[in-house]
Length: 143
Image (cartoon, rainbow, N blue to C red; front, side, top):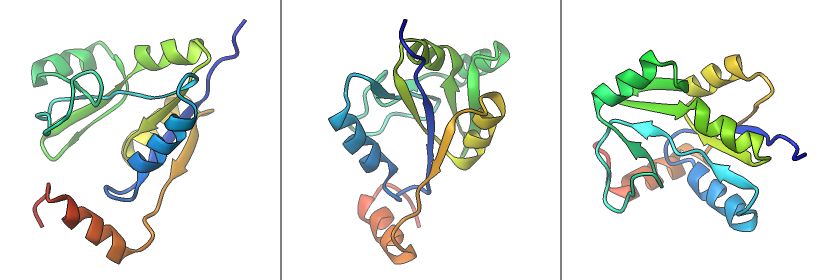
């Protein structure tokens, strides 16, 4: 019988480096570790693939999933919804796969309430100046 996987909650301010950290971890452990793919109602950015970066859904589809209590956590952020599927996480954990959630601090609190054994990791940027440099360097967000 396969041991159950572990759930890791990775939170950080945008631009702190969590995606880079997760990419490095997964590059070295591709078979037994996965990053959860969240649902969102926002439009895909250039290069994002449905089912790989996010599950892109309509607001009505997202609200139906809320009604079915299908999410470990969900939130509305800047007019868009984001959520983590309970079923998808449970399937991976049951297969012995360690799962990483790349979510904000509010989502992290919701997951910890439902699954207290989850390990929470909060990543800080090297400095406020570096964080600002990273965010402006992306050229994706307004001031």
